[in-house]
Length: 395
Image 1 (cartoon, rainbow, N blue to C red):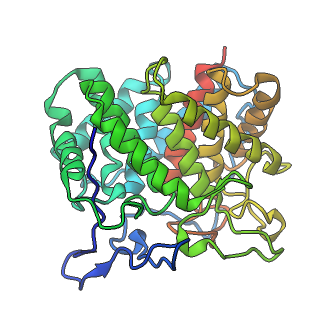
Image 2 (image 1 turned 90 degrees about the vertical axis):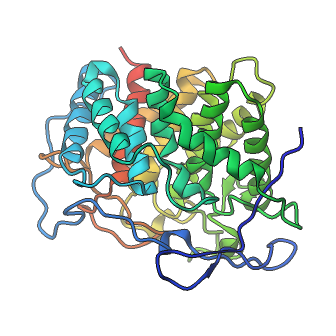
């Protein structure tokens, strides 16, 4: 099957002047790219940072039992649900939250969250974000596709399918190794939507495109000795204070979450599965070595001492992937389930009595400043994904 690729040269955002998406390919030459996070500011959850934190919730059980898991997830989910903007948001920051809401089991009032997401989708008319080839604007398609799988209404996935078809049909760039998904976060945003569409339609062109683009991104950003992804090519030479390469925990968490969501939709007998299973194993083994004493991961993975606080969004995505690996028999249960338990217990210590989930780094592309109270929607989404997957394997 011949798959054509498109790498956009310039885009316009609002009334702004053109922004270059990429200038020169790295590794073979220098690669310079604009940060997509700076092209359109996300709508932050109300009260994203508190100067005077309230009390932490003291009555959450760290045991991996369904009753305790339910209590923690519902507390956090309800807090965030009450802070959804009046006008539905299509931005990636919210799309990750929507994915988390869709994952909440029915036994934990999951239908309430799914109905809330149905309202969001209706408000948005089931449309992806405005940028044709940008992975961030495709992330909301994960929620749309989950609604399709529940309701079997083809209108729910029509606009997403049209977007994927348009991406696939765009002209191939002169340099066939130029990445469309040039930052590692994109591997959570876009590939799962392609996998969803292949599962929904049976059309293998979506998987063919996904596999090719993932491979191009990995060739550029995946360090095969460290088993970690650089955030993008501009970080290939960046070092921590201790001299180690800079690997951002949330960026790698995005990748691991993307692996899980692709594997969830690949058939058991798919010849594509071994590639993603092997990648999950490699990254999970590295993360096991880097897990902090509190069960969590710091923003910079290879220089934990340089960061005073753990980072919950990255930690939650990593936990989500480990829990999935244990549940599916991909990761050794005796080795990884204790790591999942430590991570879950660590995250619980950052939940406030009102349900606020703290210690989440704001939007960025590398480790940055935040406080114990800082909270963002994508971190809550990651927490709900992790909790839901742990719940699946609990009693």
